[in-house]
Length: 125
Length: 232
Image 1: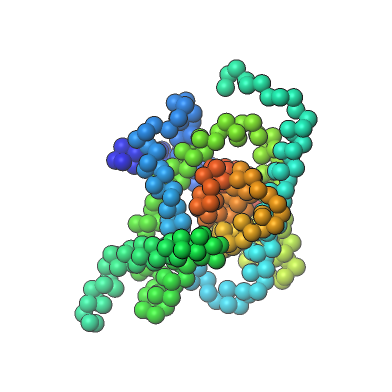
Image 2: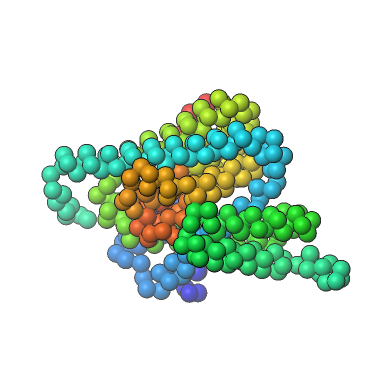
């Protein structure tokens, strides 16, 4: 667990350094995750010492959003003043995004599997 | 009693413990309701904690002194998302073209839909610009909001609300649309409702969680590039 946690924090730190050095518009942890993806792909599969810690953190991912979620109370005046247009924008906009993404992906998957010949595994895979 | 409160009010331990306790309680409620969307543990815990802060007259800054230790774990947890992602990488490669095109359609729907709705419902420009990046993960959204002239702290609140709404409605909406495949459901939830949606997808199905992670990352990257260009 110590090994796994050090790896995760080390990659996050590396990500933060890369983001600052290259002035990237993405958060450091996201770069850290991409670095871990690259490492794991070279290795083939996640090592046995990493998986329990990673899965353990992710099983309680929701908990980690609670402190930021409570931050909504800093904006109670706006929420009280414009709650209806805000709620409608958030609700309808999210429904639209979910529907467009899911339906277009499903349609595209149907189209590509119908047209493409049976996939032959690439040799450099 | 007042002496005890004077101690408790100034130690980070109290709100750290209460954040964990409310979340455990909320998770238990979610489990007993077989993960009913209205029993979303994030939503329930946030509501309970806001209630406790109001009753005790505690400021968000005091609360955050304790809760920051949990907040901090978002960083390593984000890095850890690589693990489920790598487990589905083979399927991601097979679906690369459809995923890329659906990403473009979803990102434009998120931005365009928000712009049209906010304008037609009469929200002011500052609120509109704070709303635009609301589908992407908080740190990216706050950075983008600053770039396009929004208010980053307001964006953070709207991002969280979007995530909770997404987690709340995604499953029923996608069932209504007859989208059953966990990969497609997950991708849509992660794209539309970032980390909170991803947490919900992980709760439902491991593969859905992995594709939610993918949707979240890709939309975060695309929106960070696209939104400043679209606004100017």
